[in-house]
Amino acid sequence: MEEALVKHRRRGAALEAAVLDAAWAEIREHGYAALTVDAVAQRAGTSKPVLYRRWPGKAELARAAVEHALRQDPIPTPDTGSLRGDVIELLHLANQRRVGLAAHLMAHLGDFFRETGTSIASLRETAAAGQEDIMGKIVERAVERGEINPDKLSDRIARLPVDLFRLELLMTSHPVAEETIIEIVDTIYLPLITR
Image (cartoon, rainbow, N blue to C red; front, top):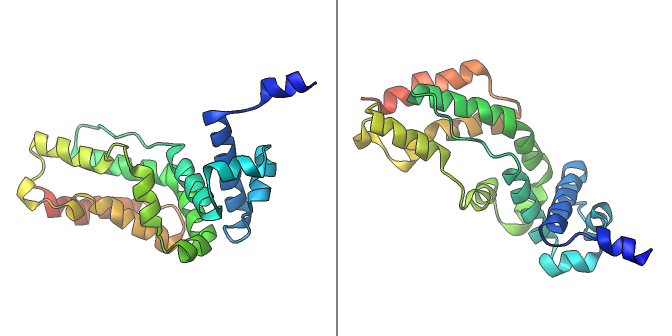
């Protein structure tokens, strides 16, 4: 019997993924304030000492769980052949893959942000570390194709469509409407940066 248990014991990346999935599920269902190491350990089928060896406290575990959740469904860099097409496709993909996650971040992590003095932006920056800058790649290709005047670019202007999309999502807690996506791209962004 003990031999069977040892064969099924998770270690390393498999154990970490199970714990982070369990922690994210607990946050989604009960919020950060009600998150306990006991509940995560039980849900993950492991012990509290296993969690404390990796994460010294609730805040560190929650941060790791959110970062893990953000990395689970990466958004590919669109390549439609045009700046307009790429940006619209990126916003559509964000609508499909990030709205639910964003709603959970806003609804269930307020206590986390207050306790740690962090924000959604800092979580996103940490989770995005080492990943491709999708909007940066889209803009880089548009410059190479001659669609964008590079003299009009700054980091803030380059990421403007994504920032406006996030603002709309944060303000409404719903998927961003198609007409809003088109307005962001056609009425605001393209006139600002195209030749």
